[in-house]
Length: 193
Image (cartoon, rainbow, N blue to C red):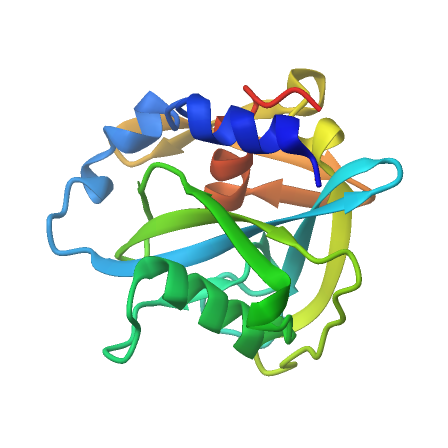
């Protein structure tokens, strides 16, 4: 287990999300529904890796987008951590016993009306997946040091009606990570691996 990662997560606040994005009128709504995503980290011989999913292509919202497992809070959920773990188990089959929550990151609001709490967790290196293909088409691991390296992060200026903001883009292995997932990863660049 990487004790340096744990100490960094517990001792340091993550960077804020893009100010331009957060100030966009679309995100000023106070009626956001609560949701949580798991930011799953697994230790490999080469270093720490994030487990990411690719959403199913037939989904109405964000088809084929790279994201973290997660979803909206259900009435039976005991906490946001419970939501993130339950959704991870439902979407990609990682067992709750293989998930060790470490820290909550700052909430982030989405264009689809959710206030999402990212839960960083260590995943047992021997985990296996059982993908729900109704929601997810695939999973993959990406080295954390690559994803949080500022040299691998790009900003794209987006014009949306009267407002503009920078959209964070992180290319990896012929995939493009963007949107909320890229914002969450970018907020973790204080971690040195």
